[in-house]
Length: 137
Image 1 (cartoon, rainbow, N blue to C red):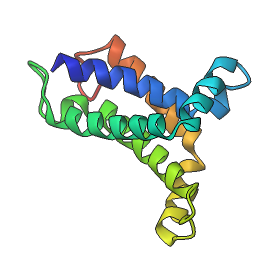
Image 2 (cartoon, rainbow, N blue to C red; image 1 turned 90 degrees about the vertical axis):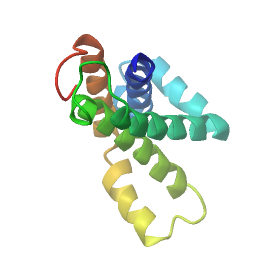
Image 3 (cartoon, rainbow, N blue to C red; image 1 turned 90 degrees about the horizontal axis):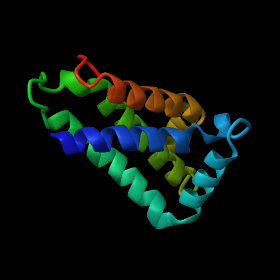
């Protein structure tokens, strides 16, 4: 569906900028303001996390006309899911129950490398926008 295509492009770029803001903050000051605005309001943060995860799942399930099932939008779907999962782990690691083993382990894997996940989401969203009919994009 065209709506999920649009949402995937927008949320990949938005989630990528939020995750990669420590990497980009020296070059672009507005990105750190965006991250602070979203992180200061819990409802916006949870809304972004749930939107990234839901659009990622629905992007895998929904098929664009003339596209191959699941494989056609694999890269944007995976970057949406990884971005949402990274922000979710970061949210849980900041809570009081961060001493649990799984959250701590995922925190060292995903949140430590959140800039890489963010830049890959920006690249996937941009390529998905520029080349809509390419397989895996």
